[in-house]
Length: 276
Image (cartoon, rainbow, N blue to C red; front, side, top):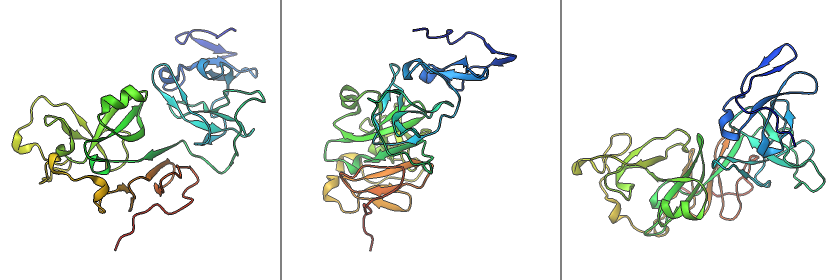
């Protein structure tokens, strides 16, 4: 099947010169000409059809995600035809119907749903994990799209595709005492990540991201399951350990109980930790 011109080729549709799609290097998009003669875009890994930008549809966790060879993950989405596709949150394609046959996975299309991504934040630091485990987040081209407790983030990379970073609130949370706890674009609000540092003074090893002191060293933390004050910060709420904070774009985050999963439409139950 003809894949069209190479990504770096200049494409002219009628009298219009079609520029390279935005962030085209992530999903491998390139410009193409629509049957109407206008500028479109093509994503070879996701159907290889010339599409108009901003295909309708939105992220739907009931639809399978698609992992690119470069590690980028396009979350599953639901098209107006009620068939699952892959959502291009990196560029301008929108919800791409990857399979237009009757064999395509089905979904319930909601025209009012404008969700671009939804991420289940199941931990935001080692205090939310069992003793000896760390909280890791997977970096996916500008968004951290998966969180979980592992024996190490190297173990996360061995069992789940992608690049994983240890999350933290202070430097004392980092398994590497020489690491820095620093913000990173795309992380959920209030979460930072451990980053290697050449040297950190011992007296400064427990300094928080905001500059405040952290008195308790990581080695003295108790098992999170035994501490009722632990949990996942989620907007103005705190979610129960075992559940998740569902981070939506757009939309406010909310708590989902264990086993419920996240959705763009919002909570189906009450996963918030009660406060006195």
